[in-house]
Image (tube, rainbow, N blue to C red; front, side, top):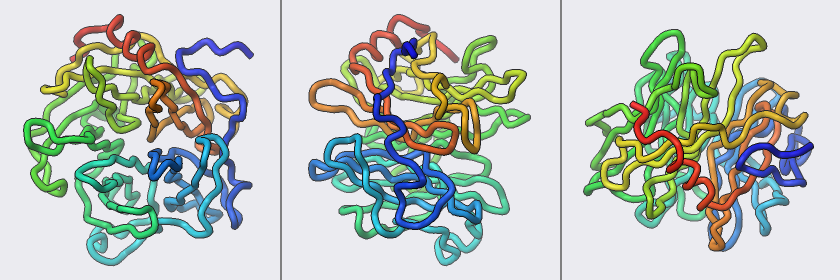
Length: 313
């Protein structure tokens, strides 16, 4: 099958499946991604046979062939500082290197709805849970990898408009736990591939032209919701301002693994790794069932943004 999108799928897809884990699980998808000490790491969302999800690390020397750790990294924990939200499931982690450590934002599914929590690690062996950093319903939280004008910054997706429609917002913090000064960044576009809701995917990547954000967009179809990936550039100093936004999706469901799973018609990313040669590796969940990989030169994705819309608010 001929690839028609900017991101090119790897021929080894899917690169990680439920069968790769040391005990029976239902699915693996939506992984945060990072390189640490020369090793590729995917902090995956793994749904067990009860239907609840935990976060499970898989490691690779080549970025393609991954081996999961013997046990999960993080599981639902009802003790402090999470006793008030009584977490039922941990989902969709993102990893950001920041201030010499790795910060992990992840979704807690609770009786009150979805909130986002923060953890950190130095070695991907021990993890410290720091607290809840959003109100419900808010997810798709990514941290910027450096401070903006002296403050930490995050993108998120509060469900601000019913029914379940979400825009991307930015907010700021002095300590990573208490957030304020929220501003809208961009919203869905009428009659486009991202017309229903949008949300941040991988943590922003700094380029000379702006912060590159690989995001997901959703469109309502007769067959249900269709999830695709897009790209946008945000201003380096004022990241609530859109520099350029690609008109076309850079990855769409196309192959069998994108349609057969817990949520069909879906490609969804939580992590990307920029190689020294300029290749961007985008790790994505397909149909909420398996992990896959697609790549493209960073300069091509940036050009796609710059040739697109200049203002999307």
